[in-house]
Length: 359
Image 1 (cartoon, helix red, strand yellow):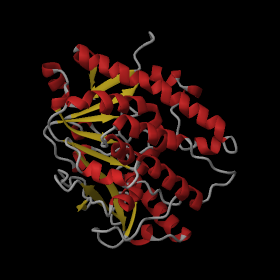
Image 2 (cartoon, one colour):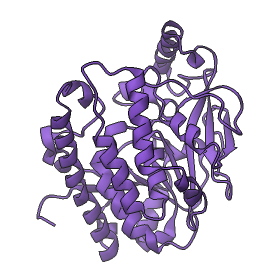
Image 3 (cartoon, helix red, strand yellow):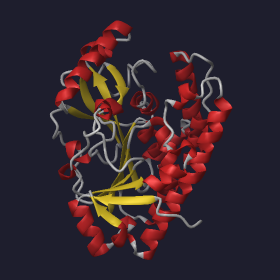
Image 4 (cartoon, one colour):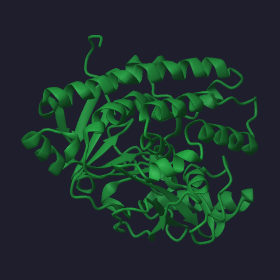
C-alpha cells in the first residue's frame, strides 16, 4: 500500500464509540451491515466492500443481518453469495459497462438493468443467498399510494413535486404517499420497528419474488417503471426504496443490539431522497447509537479523477463518450481498494480505537 494521508475515516455513534474503545472491533461484534442508495457513488467504496465481505466477515460465526436500498440492496445481494469477491466484481464491472446513446430512454435503462442483474444475480443465486450460513438478506422498497403509483408523467411528476414541497418541513415529505416495504429473509424476519411515522411492512423474500422485488428496490421514478404483481406482496406499484430510505437510518426502523456496520461513500447519512437537496439535513447521532460509518476522507476524494466521487450525472457529463466514462469509473474502482486495505490494517492491528471519531 502506497504512503498517503489517511483515506478512510471511521465515525461511530455513542454506544459504538464506547464499544470500540473498550473492545476493539471484530466480526463477532457485528449484528447488521447496511448499504445505501447512490447509484454510481457505490464504485468509490467498492474495494472497501470487497475487503469487508471477501476477507474480514469470513470469520463471523453469528447470523448477520444485511439491509440496503437500491444499489445498496444490489451490492448486498452480491455480498451474500458464496463467492462475494466474484459477485461484487461482476456487479461493479456490469454497472460500469452501461452504454447509452445520446438520448437514453426508459426502455434502454430497463434493458441495461436486466443485463446487470443477469451478470451478478442469475436465478440460481436466489437460493444460494436465502440459504447463506451467516447472512440474512433484507432490502427495502416502497409501495406507492395515489399519484406516485401512476406512470403518467403529469400525475407522477405532480406527486413528486408535492413531496418535494413538503420536504421543506422534514421527514414527512412522503407522508400518505408511500409505505416502507422490507423484503425479508424467510429464516429470520428483519428486526423492524416504525419510529418515523411511516407504515412499515415485512414481506417474506422467496425464490419466486426475488427478481421483481430487487428490481423494484432500484426503480427510480421517471428512470424506470414501477414494479407490479410481486408474488407474496400486496397489490400495488413498488418503486425505489431510496425514495424513503435514501441512506437508510437504523434509528428510524431497525432494532439491533449489536453493532451496525455502515460502509458509505459519505461521512453522514441523508435519510430520504429529498433530503439531498438540503445541505444541513443529515441523520442525528441519537438515531445512530450503535452505528459505525466507514467513509472516504477528503484526501481520498481528491485522489480520484476530477477530485470527486463519480455519480449518475456522469451519464450526462460523458454523453456519447461511454468508453471515457468507463475508464474513469474503473480508475475509481481501483483506487477504492486502498479503503479496504486501510480498514483491514486498522482492525487487524488493533489501532482502530485511535482512529475512530464520534459522530
